[in-house]
Length: 416
Image (tube, rainbow, N blue to C red; front, side, top):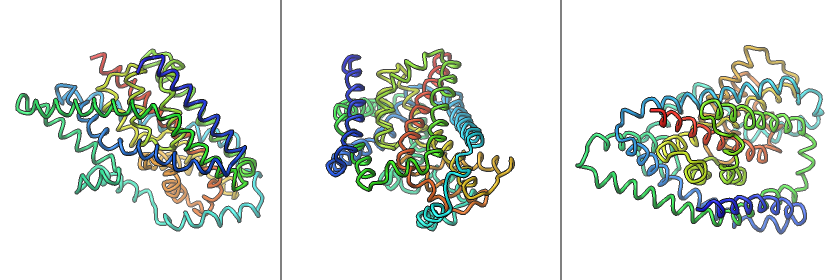
């Protein structure tokens, strides 16, 4: 895709989002009718995830030429994901303690109503514990059926298998040259298909955004819920902005000397798609295309780092979960001490790693954070009304964090 075409596409996507929000407010009933178009676009993106992850990870490992070179970049990628997630949680905790959005902002009647709304979500995950998520994280690495994992878009076992299988191929030399070449060619073909699919992105994104905003407007509660939980909403947005516009750009500049604003512009298509789909997994094909063709990140780095990041790197989700837990405590008059807030930070970090890259997956792992410090899980209803909108912002932050990680690891590759 040429630079001019890519720039026009980014502009069209931005205009599509603006037009979608405008239509949702002007004619919400008409806007909701576009839901089927958005669903088709989302399915097309999701359809590409499994084959692209398997092919890209294998292609990236094969491109190394020697599986032993995976050690340092792989360790750096995991370290980066852990550090940035912890930093995101710290930003959220600092802001929520300074702003105190839950103190005196919600009356008792509203508290009771929102608690009742949250009982359904709470009941489904009432037994969630930190021990459960640690066990599940370990089990998520392995599968007894690769096809079942592929059908359910469980990416971690597919990534583990791809790493091992491709690493084995690099040790077998000429005997498997045809297989190795075929994997690289399949990956190239899939990336070409993504380029074709991106031409439909403005239409698909318009349908996704206008249908979701239109439904909220049709229900007559969009502005009401924003006013009702405005302090909480603003706190989370401020935290996400600080992490995306200060923490991540600083890391990018320190380790790569790249211009953060230029890099953000290069990844803008992926960020807009992440906002529209609210899914790190569905956005992955676009993120990979932007990283290679626009940001100039090497294929071997993006093919290894980005699929892993879309699965375990959830900076925005971790920040939101820590902030939401303290907000709920403030709203119901429970004071959490330093030790309990450390527990919130650790649990939010682990829970974010275990969160699926699908819309509003953070709500499920939110239960774990609340349980860790003994907060009533039914009060998750306090954040349900605006969660769908915040989910879009935090997914965009997750995608940006993944792309920064790919750039940082690429710098480590280049220095060798």
